[in-house]
Every structure is written in structure tokens, then in C-alpha cells.
Image (tube, rainbow, N blue to C red; front, side):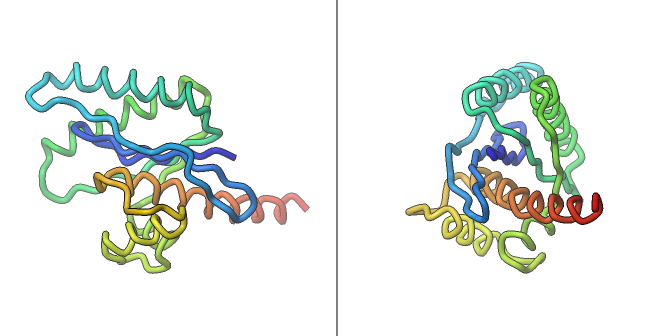
Length: 167
């Protein structure tokens, strides 16, 4: 099963493709989509949308997992990031992909085992889980891989629960 994890943003969209086979997760490709500052939002959104479609078409994920947005201060940033998240969901939906969402606390719990873990702890666990030489940069990329890992763990649990419920 191939999972695409996404950390949405307007300036930087982190993405990470992982393969899950049994309990093993393997990195496939990861990186970020970046947009130019001082560019009109509509151009930035178009760039994010088109780049995501190209990535989906190239790496062919089976499902997409997003980090849920949480903002407590900057409403302007929240609106721009929400719009970017919308075009990312549109791209995945147009390709017929199932979508899952996880809160930052759920991601931390799945990756570190503690829902209030520090960012550095999450990044180091991502590096260890995926047997990478270094923590992926920028932080948005490590966050996207953490979301993918969270979905890999959650998918397994949800599949088992559904099997039991079907019996």
C-alpha cells in the first residue's frame, strides 16, 4: 500500500510517499512544493494544485493523509493555508483517492507514542522509522512523512477493527 502524507501550506507544502508492507514502512519519495512570496494567492494555489496532480500521477498513492489545521493566532495565514489545503484535497479527490485526516496530537502519538511530543522528537522518530541518514528538511517534509506514518499505523488498526466487526 502506498500512502501520501501531506503537511498543507501556501508557501511550502510538505509531501511524503511511503510504502507499507506488513508492519514495515519504506520511504518512496519526499520533498516540498514551494511557491514564491509576493505572488498572488490564486497563482500560488494553481501551482500547488498542478504540482500535486503531477506527484499523484507519478507516484500513484493508494490513499492520502492530511494533517488537520490548527491555528490559534493568525487568521490571515489560516485562510491562505486552508485554501491550499482545499486545492490539495481537490487534487486527491479528482484522482479518486481516499482521504484521512489526523490532528497534530494524533500524529505525535502515532510516531512518538506521546501526543505532546516536541517537534524534534517527531522528526528524529521519522528519521529512525524510515531509516534515513538525516531528518528531512524543511520541517514541513518531516511533518508530512510523520502524517504518512501515522496513517500507516492507523490504517492497520482500523482494518483489524473492521475485520472483527464484519464477523
